[in-house]
Every structure is written in C-alpha cells, then in structure tokens.
Length: 213
Image (cartoon, rainbow, N blue to C red; front, side):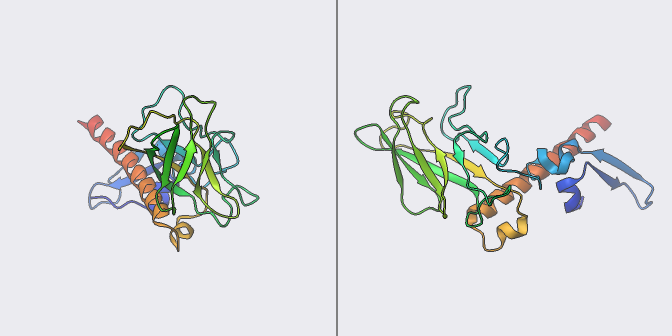
C-alpha cells in the first residue's frame, strides 16, 4: 500500500518509497507528468483562461470527429469565457464540466441542446454546413459562458435519438474554493481531475514494476 503526499501529487516530480523498516531502504519513482506545477496532470495551479485556451477542453462523446474538432478550444476559438479582469473566470461564474445532450427538432435544420444543471433547453438552427450555427450558454452570469455549436449539423442526430458531448472550463482558483458552495458539476470535474492524476502516477509505478521484472 502507498499513501501519496497531496502536494507531491499536484506539483512534485517524483515519489520516494521505503521498502522496509530501515529508512535508508528506499527507491525513487520519477513522475515527469507532474512537473511544471502539475500541468500535464491537468491539475495545474497556473491556468490563464485568457491565454491559448488554457483550461478549455472538449469531449466529443457520441459524436464522431474529423481531423478538425467540432469545438475549437483555443483562446480565439469557440468558447467564450468572461474573465475577472485577470486570469480567472468572472466571479459570478463557476466553470466546471458541462455535459450537453443533443436532440433533433422535427422539421427544419434545428438541434436542441440541453446543458445538464441548467434550466431549460436551447434551440439552434445549425443548418447543413459550417456556415450556419450559433451559440449556447453553458452557464449564466452577468456575462454568459458560451460555446459556439456551428460544428454540429442537422441530420447527425436521428429522430427519437439523443447524443451527448461535454465541455470543461476551469481556472486556477483552488479546489477548496471550487467545492465550497460549488455545483455538482464542479465537484465532478475536480474528482475527474484527481482520478486522472492518480491514474498517471499508477501508470508510472506499473512501468517501474515492469522494468524490475
């Protein structure tokens, strides 16, 4: 069994394990994915949402993807995230992981988007090519957190069918602040991040075990 130091997990670049009663009997496991404040673990404490789309990610879910993603997560792409005048989201926005269900609207070229945790659905005329489309609000505040859904086209969702995708938007506010009074979506996004971090560390340990055999 192993107990991980949380600070090392988020920001360190190695773990030292003691193999017996003697404190000098140790071995070190390098975890390069944890370097640079945990950026590659997706738990970075230094995320600037105004720069290069940091903190933005997209999961295509039930939708097939071409070489060009339906949602551009670069800073000048499809996600509009109002900031606080600095590097974080505006104070009245929480961010997190947004699961979106998509259904077809009978007749015409419209799709209906249902953002989990947000009241009501949003209908967008997406047309049949990328020249037509619009945006949906993922979260509402003094200025909405929005995503452009022009990459989704009529005919991709059949009658009586539901498809889903997800968008994640996060900044560098600490985990405690996010969880204290935050939404279920925020909590789940944090849990997913921690799962990813632990998975990366476990993979490093598995590689070590294989190399010792």
